View 1 (cartoon, helix red, strand yellow):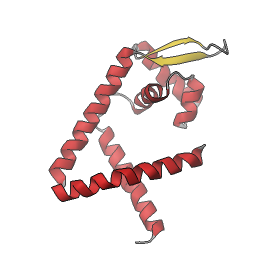
View 2 (cartoon, helix red, strand yellow; view 1 turned 180 degrees about the vertical axis):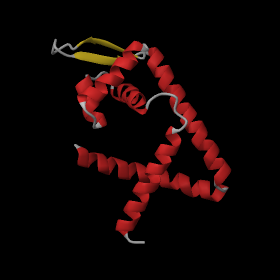
View 3 (cartoon, helix red, strand yellow; view 1 turned 30 degrees about the horizontal axis):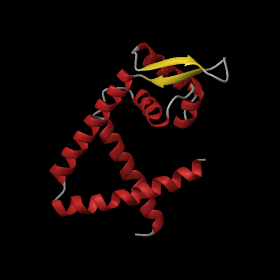
View 4 (tube, helix red, strand yellow; view 1 turned 120 degrees about the horizontal axis):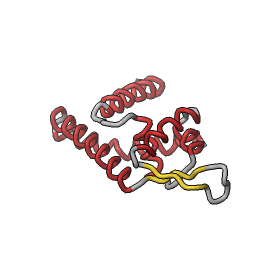
Length: 143
């Protein structure tokens, strides 16, 4: 297997894994992604969130509107630009995000245990730091 084939095979299988894991989600992916960004990165504007997600401002604004309506996010005036709003995840939003993450992890954990042998699980665990390093390197390209 050459590196080009490895890269394409990895891209395909990780995409399939992510899509399969998202089947356990109970909220739209855009809303979950926004909550995740606010949880990890702190307050952001809708424009910031659109940029981080690689979507239009309108798409991000639609998700933000839903999150605000559900009380999962709150908005306050931007301290340096009165034309903008700064979005914060609420305690309720953080709890909902944690439930989503736990549900996805539980579902994935069950699939791992039901499908892989103990030796295969050990080998899979050894891949996690490698995938983390690849992700960090690829994130450098986006900046």
